[in-house]
Length: 443
Ligand SMILES: Cc1cc2nc3c(=O)[nH]c(=O)nc-3n(C[C@H](O)[C@H](O)[C@H](O)COP(=O)(O)OP(=O)(O)OC[C@H]3O[C@@H](n4cnc5c(N)ncnc54)[C@H](O)[C@@H]3O)c2cc1C
Image (tube, rainbow, N blue to C red; front, side, top):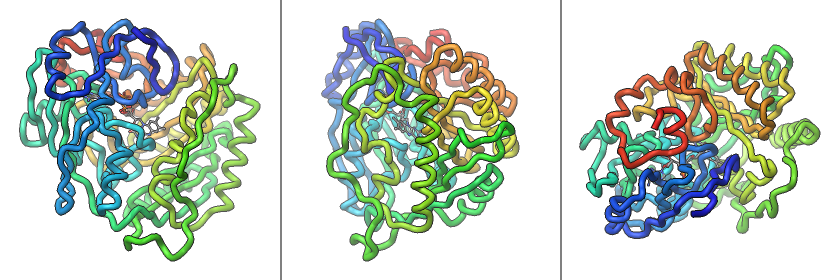
């Protein structure tokens, strides 16, 4: 048994960790229990979706082989523990790239499928599952099932976004997309209010593949409408070679590491306001067009390894919701007002829109609307009181919270937000359970 945490570092409880290294042996490893278990990739989920205290974790880091890649079609077959980083580094020099990628590339293919992760281009290319051609699912009775959009489609829809609860994905086949090279043509635009954000989002979606914004939630007034932020948009740059203009951002050769866990959170009431103000003005000064390598644009936080230690020994929460577009402005405004009133603050606050696509998996998070994601240091009761007020706004707006980020949502909000839950339950593997499934589904 050894202590295991997820990215939020809210707990470090003992787990029995079983390393899966060979897909041919994995069936036997799973069938021999002990149960319940759940797959664990890189633990980049923030809450308890990848945790199973006192139980088994099937660690997939050793399932890290590429099996086949066809560089005429962009079809990639690989094991489920392969990192998105390794796919990008193998494929980009060959003129291909992952079509959808989350804000960290230190994530496994299995984890990306199980949370049906999204990137900055949902309005154009949907979520990760939209580009999965098929996968092999191992059940805890030792049987395997091949699933794809046409083959066993019910199992496919239950497993994409299925939180690892239907089985362990061993192999996957992915469709990559063509790119001319690693460069992006980006533009940064400061904005001063929520209406301005929504106008930028509406006018950017047709012409820009990637759109995202950082919002300074400490700048919000008590009504929540006058919040400033930075809107970033980007398109892949045509032309394979490094651009003639000097790129503003290239990948750092050696990422730095947050060396220790400080005794208290470095993100606190004293540091946040100057931090946010400095960040806003620094980026505002860099407004306009720039050519940027895909790594710093897609994965700005991967350059500081273990940055999650910054929040000190108590760890931190991420709160990510999506609310429908029709009520999006009012709901986001109400949430920002609640945060301003609470005195709790967030540095990593991201606001972006999702496209008009229905969720792919039965429990996939992305749905049409606007999503707000915020990191909060763990301040005990005062954090929970704020989350309860945000929950009420999300529920009233008929929105939902993202399980990949969650460690505390009430069951009623989960059930209201995920109407296909009953359909999903028929696909659960009885030998699999996680801290999140016990909290939200009863087992
Ligand atoms: C800095 C940062 C930025 C992020 N940005 C985004 C973002 O922009 N968009 C977004 O959607 N997410 C984002 N995330 C969340 C992250 O992409 C997801 O939590 C992802 O699922 C983590 O993958 P993992 O390999 O670490 O899986 P883990 O966190 O270890 O596990 C996640 C889930 O996948 C299941 N699982 C893992 N492997 C398998 C397998 N082989 N078979 C079946 N189930 C499996 C686990 O049981 C668990 O339910 C971000 C995370 C970080 C740290």
